[in-house]
View 1 (cartoon, rainbow, N blue to C red):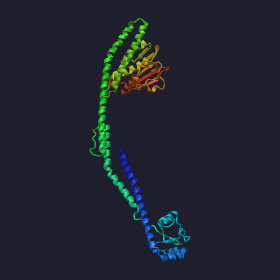
View 2 (cartoon, rainbow, N blue to C red; view 1 turned 90 degrees about the horizontal axis):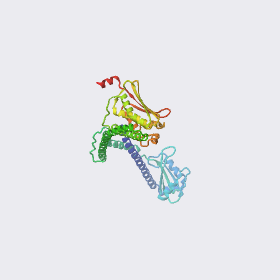
View 3 (cartoon, helix red, strand yellow; view 1 turned 90 degrees about the vertical axis):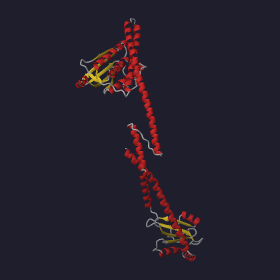
View 4 (cartoon, one colour; view 1 turned 180 degrees about the horizontal axis):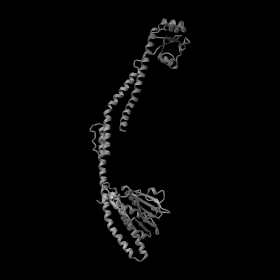
Amino acid sequence: MSERRRFGMRARLAALLLAILLPSALVLVLAQRHWELRTAALATAEATAERFSDQRLARCEESPETFGAARGRRRLRHRPGRSRGMHVYDAELRPANEASPLLDQAMAEELRSDGVAWRRVAPATGPAELQVALVVAESGPCSVVLVSRPIPSLQAPLWPALVFALLAIGAASVAAGPLVRRIRRLTRAVTEARERGAAFEPDPARDEIGELARAFAADRARLAAHAEELERRERMLTEFVSNTTHDVGIPLTVLQGHLVALRQRLDDGADRAVLGHALEEAHYIGALIRNLGAAAKLDDPARSLVAEPVDLGALVERVASRHGPLARAKGVAFDHATPDEPLRVRGDLTLLEQAVGNLAHNAVRYNEPGGHVALVLEAEGDTFRIQVVDDGPGVGPEDLPRLGERRFRSEEARSRQPTGTGLGLSIARDVAARHGMTLSFAAAEPHGLVAILEGALLSAADEARAEQ
C-alpha cells in the first residue's frame, strides 16, 4: 500500500505538471504560428503594394476579368515565397472573375478599417494557403487585390514544446524525490510510534515538513501524557473498587447471617415476610458488590487471572447453599444436582464461582413465588455443562441474543425489577470468554430461561501435572 501511495504522489505531480505545461506550450506554439502568419501576410501585402504600380493598375482596369487569370497562368510554376495567384475586386468587393474566391464578412470589415486583411484557407485537396487582400485604389474594378501563397513552414514546430514539457516533468519528479523521502520517513516514524511505542524523532529541518513533524511530536507527547494520566486514574479506581468490595463484603456477609438467624426465630408471618425482603435485598447488595470486584479484576489488564484446578462440583454446591436460603425466602424451590465423579477445570476459582452465582441469582431474583430453579452440572465426554433453568417469565426472543451485553436489560427485567443494572450476566459472559468457555441462553418450555455454561475439562495428564 505504501508503494502505491508513493507512486501515486509522483504520478499526481507529473500529471499536474503535464496538465499545466502541455497546454501552455501548445498555446505558445499556436500564438507563435499566428504571429508568423500575420508577419507573412503583412510582408506579402507590402510587397504586393510596391509591385502594383500605376501602370499595372491601368492594365488591370483595361481587362480586370482576365488580369488575375493571366497572372495565374504566368505564375503557374511559382517559386516559394512568391505570389501563386492574384484576384481583383471592385470597391464593393465583387470579383472581376467568377472563378475568384469570395471575400467573407470578416475580411470585408478589416479591409474597410485597416486596408489589409488576411486569412488561412485549407482546401479539400492540396496544401493550406495564406490569402492576403489589400486596397490598391479607392474605386474602379481593381480596387482590391487578393494574393494567394502557400502557408510558410513553422519556425517552431510542436515537438520541441512536447520535449520541453516532458523534460520539465522529469526534472520536477527528480527534484521531488527528497521531498517524497522525507514524507515517507515521517509517515514511517508516526506509524512506528503509534503501533510499537517507538520514540518519535522530529525532522530537524526548518521548513514546512519539519514543522509538521514537530507538531506530530508535540501532539504525541501530549496524548501520551493524557493516556498515562487516565491509566493512573483507572488503576487507582480499580484498586479502590477492589479494596472497597472486600471491606464491605465481610460485614455484609455477617449481616446476612444475622438476618437468616433472626428469620428462623420469628414466629409472626408478617415479620418473617419483612425480614425475607430485607434478606433478599442484602443478598442483592452482596451480589452487586461481588460483581463490582469481579468487574474491577476483569478490566484490569495488569492483573492476570489465576489459573488453578477448580472442582466444579464443590463450586456448584457452594453456589446452591448460598442461594438456597434466598430462594426459600422468596417462595421459590431451588434444586441442584452434581455427578458423583469430580469434574475439574483450570481457571480462576473466584471468577468462575461469581459467574455461576450470577446465573443462579438472576434465576431466583426474576422468578415468582411458587417457581422453580434448577442448577445442574453434567459431563459430556471431555467437556462439562452447567445449566441454570428457571420457569419464570423469561425474555422475548428478540432479547435473547443480547443477554450478557454490558448494561443491557430485557423489557421483562426492567418491568419486574427496575433497580437492576444488567452487570451480573455481563460479568458471567466476560468470565466465560476469558476462560475459553461459552455462555448461551435459550427459552425454557413452557416459559422461563435456560443459561448454559460449557467448556473443556482438565485431562488426566493435566490433573497429574497440577497435583505435582
